[in-house]
Length: 245
Length: 305
Image 1 (cartoon, rainbow over the protein chains, first blue to last red):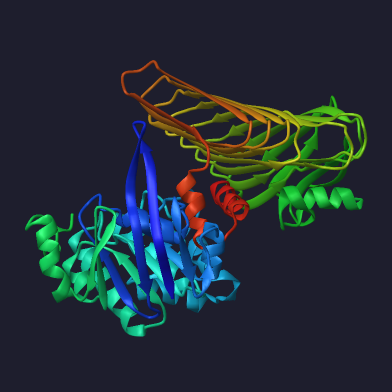
Image 2: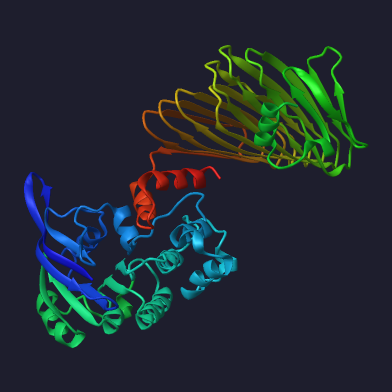
């Protein structure tokens, strides 16, 4: 279980202190599919980065399965069972899909197993295994490879996805949703997704609405929806997948 | 061959066993093993400065090994090897030099390789440079490659230096005839206070000839690298040069491309990127459980693979 206690995050902007997150308190239960949503600039991605260790909170504490991990490095958190899928997956020169999946899986995996991780995200291992994780791959392909690294990582107890819908086409998005649905069904790990997308909100066990760096409401889709409309109005937020760019 | 020499040979020729193919193994200034085959004749030059390697026309799928090994401290040599690749031949040439220096004197090998690639011939040339040893004596190498490719000829050159060479100046000049192609892939890693200079000068003379010069390098610690690539388009031709370098610690890298078009239909491109390892690349690998150092090693290993 992940627990955030009074997490605050401040940055200096043009000489002034700007509060990005103000006293976030959250508990994420094991095996639950949770979505954090909220308007742009509400602090969602920052919160994901704080959970995974890319950013350090200004104050507050993080507990993971009862251990205080506030001062853990990214590596220590990964070794403790956290995984993270980037909003913009990272590209590498010379590192192949095989290298990346193998690094994620550790030494335990045979060829068949490695291929199965790609298959789970709808990619044919024969076509992709030896390709470099570089600009020759499309946004959708990169996203799926990114997710495959999370499935491959054997010790994952909590998988965090930062806006998986960003930067991919509609076709790829439909396939991604199916991957998430499958992961949800398997209930092997807690899943935390930062998202605006209705289709993703629909499959969540719990939705956390964040606005102005604070938790506004926690509940199911039907409980959260009216609150969201109050905050952002009926604009780009909470629309069908047509909003995916 | 002693153990040091065996080790050097393994480092520069990988797993291939040279004694079964056409070869000349030079160790500490002398030829210790030589084999010519029906199609590949290896002859010592009369003045004793090197070898003539004559590959008959239509020779297919044969390999020539010309490794140089130095494990005596203080040896300094300059060797001239001339390769004549006959028309329609398709061969692989594996050269390279390994220096083991346990002493205090500098060891140096300057290898001047000239390639005459005949009409319609194809050559894959690989040279790997490697150094090791516990002594303070420097391990220096200055390979010079002179290439002439005739009509429809093709040459791919792969040059690799991964460790142990204190100073290197590599010069490659080439002249390409009609429809000829030259591809160069260079990979260099320097560390400590090593220096590596690369100098390409390719003359694209024949109609529709082309070249692609690709350099990937990593400079660690206080090492220094200079990459110069000059391409001259004298006809309807295509030339591309790319220097992609990762900079670390207090290292220093300069990339100096020069492209000169002397013909309206000469199409020449140069690209150069120098920068440190992207922070997000390190973070991605760290989220997979690697330490920062392990992540760095993986990124460099992939980059120079």
